Length: 283
Image 1 (cartoon, rainbow, N blue to C red):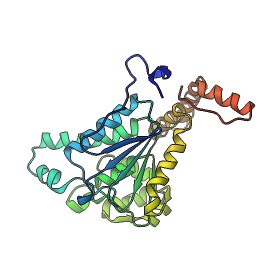
Image 2 (tube, rainbow, N blue to C red; image 1 turned 135 degrees about the horizontal axis):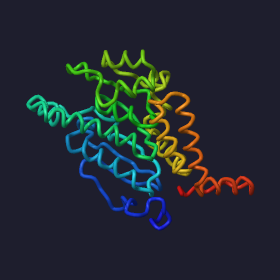
Image 3 (cartoon, rainbow, N blue to C red; image 1 turned 90 degrees about the horizontal axis):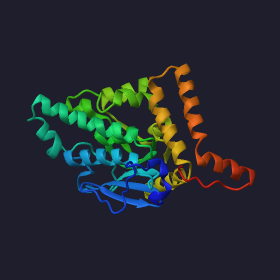
Image 4 (spheres, rainbow, N blue to C red; image 1 turned 90 degrees about the vertical axis):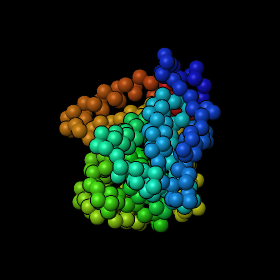
């Protein structure tokens, strides 16, 4: 998709990721789907200070990128992410002052804020270990696909910390319910694939060998839809957490009226009348 077609992001806001490559994780674009690969498989793909910050910056930048319409996050080597690197993050944290610790915890929270604020739906493809900050990335995604061998653990209490990390006490109960979130956040135990599907944490389960292709296929299907409409849906899902029903209904009325002004809405009507499939362009 060329920049000249995306007039709603013109005026200094439109950016491109063509040719861009991160330093601390893998990135490629397939069609309109961006694929993030956490790629330190020898240690089950832990995060570092640098990868936290680079992921945060990518998700912030995606707000201004129109050639990418959906995101998939995966881990390399049969595991998703083991959390913060014990040697490169946990050890140094024990030597930091309070101001530095707060700067770090705010930075990790900013990754979740950026994931929730980017307009593209985010799918996490979760196999094997998904622990600590890895579980948070999965939680902060819009959709989650797993395998029967997925092991998701919000293990913060097991290292002497609170379970309330990076928005977990706000977001996780909205996915699995207050009681089940309390179980996971107090115990730090692993949530298996089948249990995670039954609890609603996972949307779907697949065989490990098929996981990535299924996630990419789902993301590609989403990417063919009305990207402006999807972005509005994501924003409403997030903003309505703190609204009453009356306020939510009014917000959705305004959001839908805005979407009715898009060319995608008009294309869909014309395609329906012509008994054709609409082509959504995001404008």
